[in-house]
Every structure is written in structure tokens, then in C-alpha cells.
Length: 246
Image: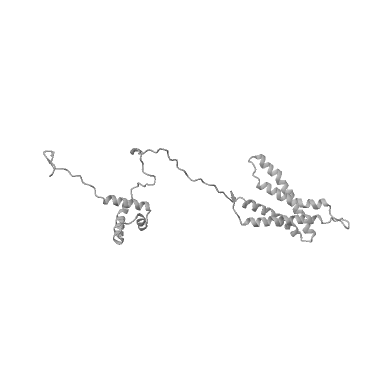
């Protein structure tokens, strides 16, 4: 099994990388935003800076587990996904969104930008993750087929009874269309006069715009019609007794 290359996967990797880096950087930068009553020389706690890395990572990992894992069927597994992983993704996404929004507000952005701006960052990471999952389903399956073998008996019979013989499956015994026989005869005669040789089934099929198999059956029918049938000779008889001629 070989995964087929998809051009969009490159952009999806770029999007998830940019979204993840920007989201982590913004969360870390938000940890350095001083509170309103912060004293002079305030610095963020080390735990706040370290934990700022986790929220975007939690969001990405939760989405990957939720979408890529082949979950078994059943209500238990559905509930586990909905009430287990989905809250993790929602909480991580909300916290990361609030950090980005608060950072934009601290930088003096207007309320609308501070509200919708974080959606471009976390949203890019979510959509890029979905693109990787979607393009990852395009696969090419190579299944080797062994060559067909025919079992031949060790001692095949020298002859076969006539009653067991049957025409090959490829032989078409359907009578040819009777309305094409005059056109076929005309084509046969014309081709013989123009080229000095008999017309082939392929040439007849091209000329009459019919399948080659139909042309073959038409030629066979004409050959059967043109073959003279031997007339039995009835010897003369005298008073009911056959007399052989000298």
C-alpha cells in the first residue's frame, strides 16, 4: 500500500506549522502581560510561561486523536470521544483563544480585531489538521495478481467421444442478418474486381460499418451459398431392377 502524493498536503503542513508556532508564541507572550496591579519590575512566574506552551499543543493533539484514531463501533466509544476528548479540545481552544485575544487587546487593537483575530490563528491550525486527515485518505492499493495457471491432467485422453464435444465459447453460431447478404455479395464482387483478391472480414466490417464478427458470419454464409451441393445420381431401372450403364 503506497500513499498517493497530494499537492495540498504541503500547504496543510505549512498551515499547521505556522498556526502552531504563532499560537504558541502568542500564548507565551500573553504570560508576560502584567496584571493591572503589578508592581514595578514584575516578571511572570515560570510556571505561567511553561504552561503557555501546552494549550496549543493540547488542542492539536486532541484533534489528532479524535480524528485519526480508528475507533471501534458502539455507543461506549462514541460517548468516550464526545465526553472525553471533545472537552479537552474545547477547553484548550477556548484558553488559547482568550490568551490571543487578551494579547491583541494589550497591544492596543480595536475590540473587533481582538475578538476575531485569534480565530485566524487557531482556526488555521484546525483547518490544516483537517486537510492532513482528508488528504491522508487518498491511497493507492497495489495488489499483485499471480499468473493464471491451467491444471493439465497427467494422462489426457487420446480421443474424446463425439457426444462430449462442444463448440468453443468464442465461436458465434448466430445466423447473420439476412438483409445484409445482398450488400455483402456486392462488396465481395466489387472488391475482387478492384483488387484481384478476396475481401477480408475486417475490410467488410469497415465497408458496411458492422462488427467484425458479423462480417465473418456474412462471409461464411455467402461461402455456404456458393458451394455447389452434389446431386445424387439415380441409376436407370428396368422393371424395377437397377441397370448399370456401360
